[in-house]
Image 1 (tube, one colour):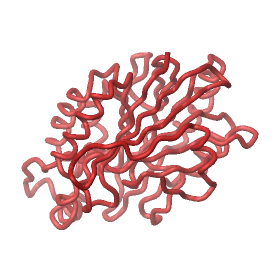
Image 2 (spheres, helix red, strand yellow; image 1 turned 135 degrees about the vertical axis):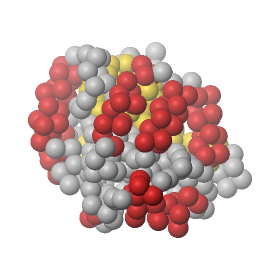
Image 3 (cartoon, rainbow, N blue to C red; image 1 turned 60 degrees about the horizontal axis):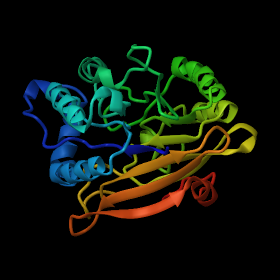
Image 4 (cartoon, rainbow, N blue to C red; image 1 turned 90 degrees about the vertical axis):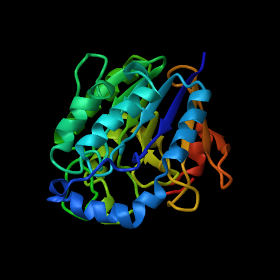
Length: 307
């Protein structure tokens, strides 16, 4: 039987909870100004609610969320984020990795682990990264690229410890015949300016080139993206990004959307169909695109790409 994985990212829950002046004595100040000037007009809670309702109606077996529930990493955003995750599904049915806005300031890491830890743990019961969750034919491997940065910076970094652990995890899941899906917030290939990129993207691509994976899912750039990463012996790995799940039509880089992946088969003989569903200009959720994994690989290129 086929297994359906849903992927959404960057919900940026709106509106912001009450903000006190004491909350803004750090990087949050510039982020708050940016929120007031621009981002609050992009991220629409009604759009997100419609997208979530459509996603749940599709009946996926599992849901992957690749970061940025929060905006400024305010304490109130983490309790609200926990409620949102619980509405999306129980921890065994939803996998989460944090983004740069979730770890916007130093305390964001402890806040996220405290409130969202059950969604960021592996089957071994431990919370942390990288984690492995086996669901049906899938081995879902979660990486964290979120870290606190200086004002006006949105870079990410996986770090040496996670990268050292990633290779053996990928090898074990391959030997046991799983379809390996890597989750990370920042894309391994991006057209974004340097202040928004994954700092150790080259090291992540090297690890994937040595050990392989069947699919990598990310967010961060708020775009429908498709890139090919070299796997072992040059076999390509599709890296697919999605727009913000709350982006109102005509206001963000792209209108809100999510992807479904219908996976079937067995090791070395997998089939995978991707269905993109997003909000139209009239507010309805519609199918935007449908293609097979083979087409994903044929249409991609080594350069940053858009779907």
